[in-house]
Length: 324
Image (cartoon, rainbow, N blue to C red):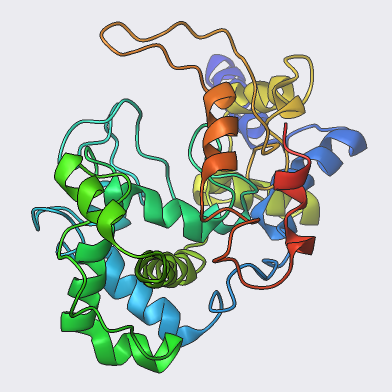
């Protein structure tokens, strides 16, 4: 009987030990609270896109995002890689559109909060980013004038209710782009300056509509957020908000000795900067020079913040002006 009592007492001690609240210092609690989604500030307006928060623009952008007609061969849409049930990415090591790319798909939850876009930051606005895959031969593989003709034929009325009258495309080629194949580039170069500007204006508006939709894609609370809320309020954690001892140790390392939080900080676990982590090139892929090439690409982009297709004034271009 005495042995059984000692055994029950030991088991009770183990259970109670497992239920003990995590022991964090006040400084650690402050850091953990800063990582929770509840500390995420309101989304700032995008003054370079005056349609960014227009519901009709977001609705059109959503349609375009899921439309396979927004590709050269009609087989790929933005959602091919940015899958709605996978945090708007695809779990593949390399994205696969019309072809296979050299990098994995970026998740889109909270993307509107980024100062730079793509892994290397080669675009400086969400709407300029949205344009790039449309003409990339490995992603959606379309061309600028083809998209303009497609929009006029299929979504002309919706487009004009948001952006105003579409230009007259009757004397413009069906397939032309400054980034396309030899035939498409020749057709683009044969167009007049006003014609190219008209096409670019429509193309920019497509990006602005898609960006308006993507601004609505917000990160959703995770186990960590529920844990952080309980820790901040002193509530007893329940369900998946209960962290194991190993998880607690990992969290303490993350915000402490391991210094992970130096770069992975804030409610999105990022400092929005670029770092050389020393990861070697992937075998079978061309060397990835990262940010150094992206700097030149974003400077040359006609849709960047200093370009003619930006809304608002240049006061929004601080990131590009002081780019590093």
